Amino acid sequence: MAKIIIRNRNNTTIPANPAISLLQLLGRNNIRLPIKCGGRARCGYCRFTMHEGLKKASAPTIFEQKFKENHPLPDNVRLACQTYIAGDCIISLGEVTEN
Ligand code: FES
Image (cartoon, rainbow, N blue to C red; front, side, top):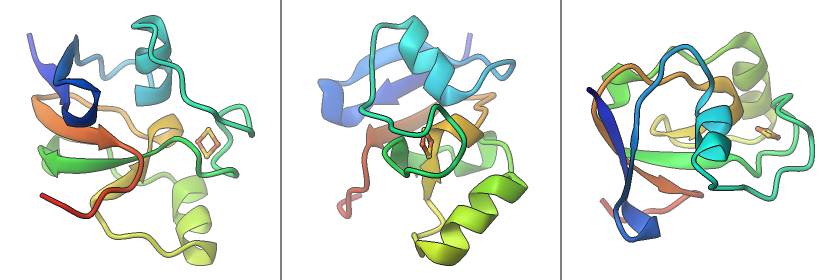
C-alpha cells in the first residue's frame, strides 16, 4: 500500500488514499491542522510541502489555482484540502524551504 511520510512530524507514516483529500486523510489519522475555511481553498492553513512524489498528487483544482493566483506559492507547496495522493510521497506540513 502506498504511504505518505510526514517528515516534520517525526516521519509519521499514514497510508495514502486517493479517494479523499489529504486534509481528510490527515484528520482520519488524528493529525489536525488549524484551518479556518473548512476546506474551501481560502485560508491556506492546510498548505503542505511535497519533498518527493509530486507526480503522485492530483493536479491543482480550479480552487487551488485561484488561491495561488492571490497567494503565490512554489509548485511543490499544495493545499491539503484540494490534493488527493495516490502513491508514495514525502511531505512536510506547512511551507518549508529545505529539501
Ligand atoms: S483548509 Fe483552508 S485552504 Fe485548505
